[in-house]
Image 1 (spheres, rainbow, N blue to C red):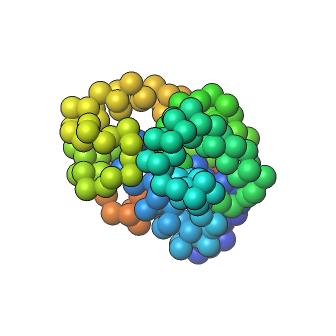
Image 2 (image 1 turned 90 degrees about the vertical axis):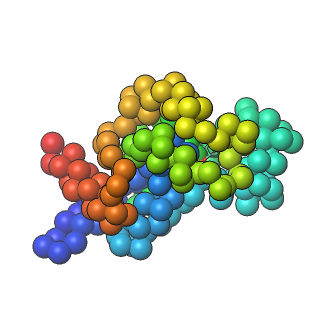
Image 3 (image 1 turned 180 degrees about the vertical axis):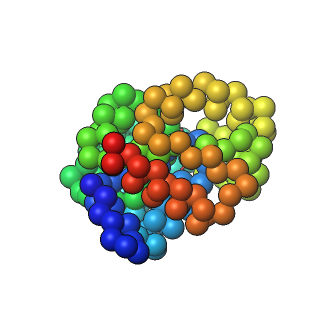
Length: 183
Ligand code: S3P
């Protein structure tokens, strides 16, 4: 799945980055795209473009279940590709069917971040309907705790992101993927 020569590591499987809103999934997916010449999919952006409206408007107009259905459909499409770094929406691993789709031809990386780090990263954004009116460390901490079990169950690899540089996180992912492939 992962090809390595003396200087470079190339990945042929898909890499699914999961984790809470604001855990750095899109930043890391972009790093993998630039550094390893992978394709990159940011799920929220694709869904938003497909529907012709923001994520907040999709939630407001059609409801959360409709949005979750779009996520599942998009994952099924991604399954047909390879070498894609996917920035998943924070709710993706909550559905078993999504976890199965990711695992079919990909490795799942859980980007861990503390509630305070997450808060600092999301506090100025307004396109996360689940956080509107709830943007505080206590709420983030509570929702993270509720979701943690599912994130952990879905993950092949865990990466702590607090206080680390983007490149450091990206390289840690690639090294851990190599170790996984050797097993
Ligand atoms: C959600 C996370 C968001 C987006 C939607 C719901 C969630 O994506 O899909 O607002 O349930 O955690 P990001 O994790 O990219 O912010």
